[in-house]
Length: 98
Image (tube, rainbow, N blue to C red):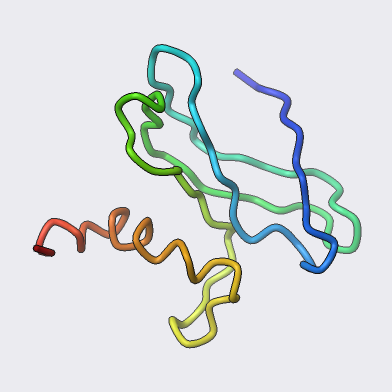
């Protein structure tokens, strides 16, 4: 199944490095991937998802999917640094946090 979306990009940023997904539907869904075709100056941008996205009533914070670019922690682009909580959650690191 495919969905169309509207993407808002801050002009000061080069390319989207992450997408925020909010599920306003009453049931969860499982996106396999998100692909932006023909982005100006970049072409194809792919986000692997493979994760359940629950509706906003069950999921307490924004769900973030990161692009297929890898960054060392020290090289993480500034706009993505605020999502380290989500990264820890996706890795399972938050299970051990108190």
